[in-house]
Length: 284
Length: 264
Image 1: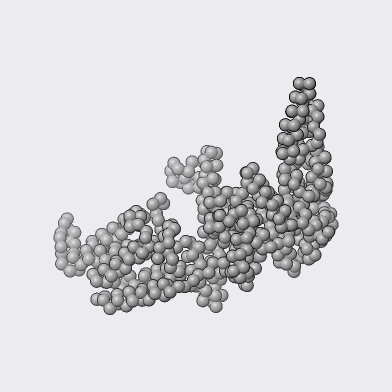
Image 2: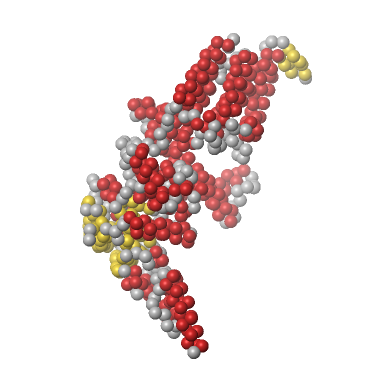
């Protein structure tokens, strides 16, 4: 499989600080993969995000994005490969209307007007914001603004999309909106996604999860694998998804659950079938 | 500030709305000069007619305009009385409590306040029919010759459009901070002026800190999307100078000539 992002033995230390914010981090993200990097505050995940987009240079180690080594000379080439959605929906909205915002990145690349028009429409359609093309940002919800931010990123046709805590300031429905859009984008366009979050609820749908704590990678694997370390995750200050917590507690109380459910749907469908199974037993 | 309509955009599709923003900016600029050409009944008549024509073409309701002008009306009235009392030319019309009012003074006062009123109506009309972003684009285009002298026209225009985009955001934030501080016992609305000024620090300090933080995040977001200044940049919003714009400018030229010929 082709490697999209390769991080090799990267360490980082902030000036005037004794401890390393990142210590010997190595991982790879393959093309078309959805990797979630999860960690509590101070785990180093935000520092990692800054390193990936070239805002901070690693103290040691190397980062390659789509085969390009990241350094001061290549920073603009690397950024052309990346589309980034940040945390605050307001502070990344540059344009005065939705279409102006998507156009901003295209203008920077010197793309001609006709092509711009095509790409703006396509990108907004992909995030289902095409009906809001003339709206000003203050007339949009947080989730809608983040969808515009996604459109602005994908209009530039990047190879990798980085979601840097992109849902953390949104209400539950906004979160759902944004994740839903990202998932359908990935299904239809085979995009590589690196999602950085503190929310374990967002982990369930990733292909691979990297758990960070105190500047190190502590766990790596599929969501199911990660969640099998339930207590360890909680010790690191991460909140297990509600469905998982509930299935574990039910099991502890002697209710025969077949699995630890990562999704609400799975849990609900087990619970209602369980109930009818049990009532069958009772009537017999 | 309620009731002020200067600076507010009224969506529409009138003749004036459809004019190129550059035409409207030029109109305003020229109008500021030609308004001083008028110095007698004829010329003021023509100017008033022209202004009414603009107002009619913009389809902005007359009553809306009047309502919006209320806050500046007292300035106009004040100007009128100032002239009436201070100009001492022509015949005395009446005397009262030792105040002498001359006929020329009344005429002068009326003309000056009319001039003032016309200027305000035309500039208000510009902002009512042009979106702020169009104004910015128009300014950028009109000022672009200054690039030769290293004036950062593009950067200034971008700064302006970003400020415009952030006005509602910062307003919202101000309101939020005010509520938060009120809940903590800060009193913004009563007490002596000095106390109230002091209370403002509880509002301004958080507001400034957050604005700087926003600016920094915005700069990062812009950089990541490839912003490197005006070089090799294309423009999404292109202004199109149409035939009606040329015609309109010619019309203003004619107006200026007519005023020049008719002034006494």
